[in-house]
Image 1 (cartoon, rainbow, N blue to C red):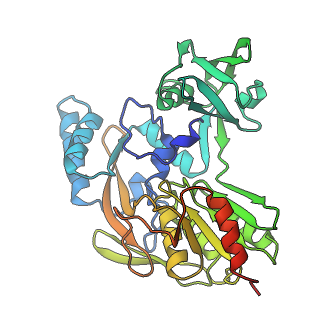
Image 2 (image 1 turned 180 degrees about the vertical axis):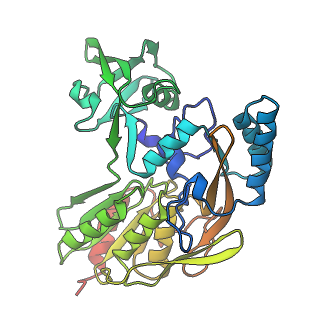
Length: 389
């Protein structure tokens, strides 16, 4: 995997990109495929087990079926229908892309385990190497220059192209396939051939600051992330506050965001939402830590499920929200399987915070707007919130 900087980009990924932003594309929905629970069903719907599609889905499915009967591509017909729908969050995935999408929801991805960014001069630099990954085992290190992938020069190319080359196309984007990296470290230039592998993402990281403050960073709401947050809260020093860092978090599984909310709330409303006009609600589990001082950090990359969590903590007076206005992605998508195995998703509803605030297109305004030095400001705010006892 590469391109951590891309996680907050819009989800409008189309065929030909090889799902280059698979994790971003997946998580930016926030409501994600099957993320909102349906009474009596699993909170993780698949295309075959989704709630009744909206009329837009029926139109897309009809276009795909007619295209297949005429010997044309159902996926291309679906893409045309989706583009005419006016749905800014609609997407069409190939069967393989959708499988990657579901893997990412499970906190997994297929790749070599490195992150990269493009420098001002156009060079591609490695910014992180995941421990135990194929890239790490091959000796790739942070700061190395990535010059080529399978013989293709990557200097000056968008990071999205680099991600696509690292992940592979429809024929080789799977564990066990090989990719050759052209690297440079100082004056040394060399090549390494590595095998892609199914890797786990680190969606929750925890660290302690000098004052005893615990910083819990959630990069995405993947499977199990909510419980990791609850564990981190239980293990945090009792006499210090917590900074919940949601910057750049583009969403994920709503059920996990609700579990995370349960770490800080003693039950009660987290959000309300509608699906095809039916009104529903989400509630936290009782027993969360309601006394410890809490600051939530947000920015323009805080989206969807992360906005839902932010809104719940803010509306219920549980946290001071600090940073900049969030993205404003508060809509719900559900999937439809097409005749060729591809999947189309269209928006079927929207969610609201406990006070009834609509997030979609508006975002959440922080209590304290800070553009730089947000973490340091959060420490100052926590010191002013007093002893949690």
